[in-house]
Length: 536
Image (tube, rainbow, N blue to C red; front, side):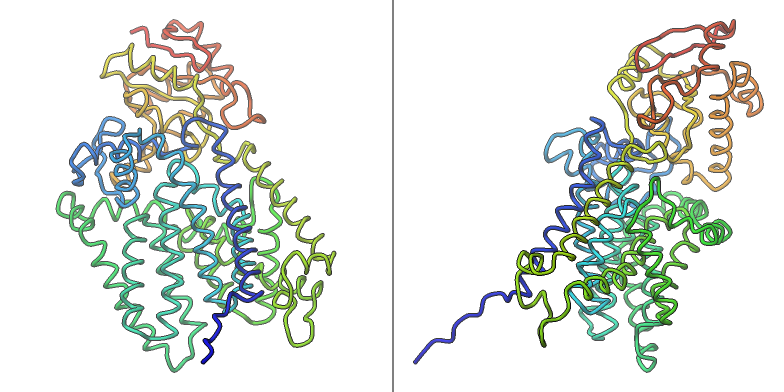
């Protein structure tokens, strides 16, 4: 009696695994490489560093408030990323700042695999999944705001959202009870990671059945989505109940108001803001072209998905829009590949020979791959140093200046940090309360949890202060008087703050007039900053 021979993986399987591995490595490279520009987390994360420390200090029980920037900020943020950060810090004995430097990039890289799983399931093809994952991996917007310090929650949220959408598609196709449970668990983890990821997940699972499920099954699909949503709320309920018991629903409602604005979303759609990147991105352009192709073919699901993603959540929609855009690269690149490497008989080219053999037989395909790789890596490199990119971070001289503040000023001292930047990319303003351990009167981060009016007030205070970066010392006095703020110390950084193309001095006129002002005196002038104290 002869034993049946075990069949090894087919050529098609090996090719998919090989190309997917290359895509995953490329996705990891473009996400990890920018981290070398700073010894600290890129851009933001100061709020989360303090919240993680607060969580660990409270025995991993959610405290009422975080001590960030003078306290009084409700500890209402979804805590999963904070628990992970605090847990790693406790187990390995490392500083949360170091964890926040690497953890976001790790989850962002893992999201490329999650994107493959979603695309392969949604488009019913492993190769289409690989193409979509490759486009997603190399689109700068898919990682720009995820590999920075604050990505400890954002990247985690996108990772679970992609897995949850994929599981939701499986649930809607097969109508099995276990798929409802799996979708609920992943949905709950998404909500525990990041609020805007939960919004993206919700609108995704409402869009898919409207176009992707047979009309006769839509009612059953809606019922299953509702059951999964209830299950997700149960998973997230310990956090939600803790916040509501301590603070009531106000912080949750206030944070939602800061991100959802249909007017801004419509403006971004009409202005094609989702295609606007720090430098020209070929993959995004191909995605936009693919959206037009799908509209021409009356394939409405993915175009509608893109529109809703940006319209409902304009603040984070640019990041989540990379998902439908990457899916829309498939008809463009898929058509090119099919024409350059036509099917061999009844067997598809990539199922008949290994990838190296296929590239030798079809040099045009090899040239296309090299060109796409070169252009995409060049885009990634240029994006990392672009002035409008968030991929900039603290330098040792800045940290030394903040350390001087911590060691040489009173605990009650307040500071005006002037960089001339926008609050989303102003890493100095966010990290100052953590590293200097003093209150920054204009830092915006965290104010969204104190109420919508408090957020708008702090945002206005911040913007007017940064306008003084282009003015003189008199501007600071008028700013403080206008907002009825006491005079504070002034922290004026040095060097290029936002990459090599940004000015070497953010505020030359302000610095010069403060130097000669009778109302201020210099108490520190180092390579990282000049610090002024009020004379009265």
